[in-house]
Length: 185
Image 1 (cartoon, helix red, strand yellow):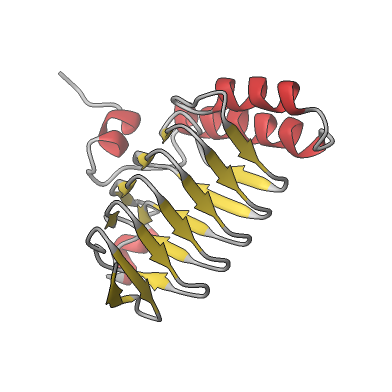
Image 2 (cartoon, one colour):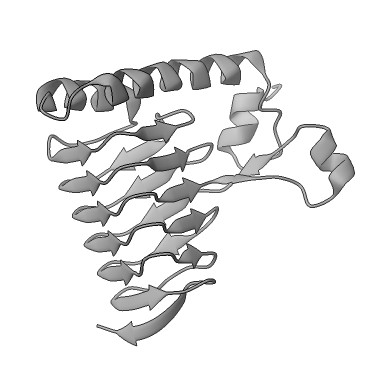
């Protein structure tokens, strides 16, 4: 059986993101983001309807402030009581899974995409992706970047301005660039 570029993307293999199917799916997601970002904050029900069309799963206890952007949407899975402040970007070429009671500050980014280190490979236009998992009861401060393949445990606080390049265990406060555990809770 021949794998499609989408199959390769979802399985973490190198894939060609300019594939027509993937381009069309990103376009659909960006249209939904545009709709969401165009609605007033007071239109809570309408915003939730768009998010339920966009995300792989979400509950009714979701609030995503504008502006919000993602690549596909269907790879984003959100638990209960989820809040995202302004200017969040989720590049969901792989799954991005958020547990219950997750609060995300403004200007945060979650990036599953990876590009080859070798410039010749990178010039071919291929990339790969690895999932991001955020546990329950997590607070992510403003201007935090979470990179591909990272897992953040339950009951974690990530300090503002952090760049999370490696897994963060449960029950701690972590911050910095690169983000490191500084206190156990």
